[in-house]
Length: 310
Image: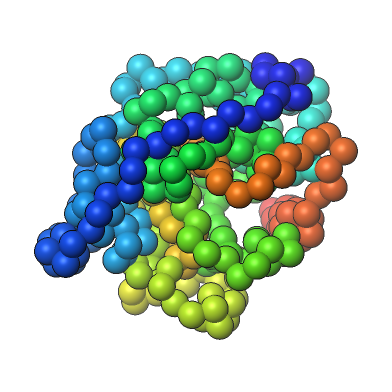
């Protein structure tokens, strides 16, 4: 059951012009701590643009209010209730990742295309406060509700039976190669965060500046997804509930497993697909991409190994 008409025509959203960056802006951006938290205004400032160009990521503080954070989480709980009742295993060919919750109950850990099942989420990601962020993607963008994996909501949880406690090193360029696209150009991931996460809590790790690497390094610097080791150049992206992050998908990044267990380990994020390329919608008849099938097999194997150990 969709909350949004699955046959809709995507509208293009207009964004402010890209900031003009000077050498002085670049010098100032390089002088800022890698942990800098910016304020999202009506436009992206030249220094913010220079910081993204240099390091491959930005953190904007408190973009969502406390009430909005609570409403998003309530909407996701509602989607989980419906999907579990329907025994839904995938949406548009993309697997729904189900693990176990704190009490051993079924707990959805990855919700693809979530904005199609919540009018509130559908409208939220089109809010005009995000127009400056969209300007980083292009002059005119659309929300990819039906494309790639749609609006993805993730819930990382470290408990026995969890299907999604961490994510190994990767770049998002490999996905485009699997989709038979050209060598990846600039690509930006826009994330909203719903928990207070510090370095000691695990969470997102990025190698600053790795988006400027060559194509060979993008393919071979690390074994994709199976490598989880600490990199000497990585930084932890620390967030508060309501923060918004932007990171270049060509950067090497991973999700570090939380050392804590139970509810303290919960980390909730969603990623908004703002797109400019040719419209490429998926439907309920779409096939599961190879890399998702491979990841599903890996999760199933892990589950069987966990059962043997226990």
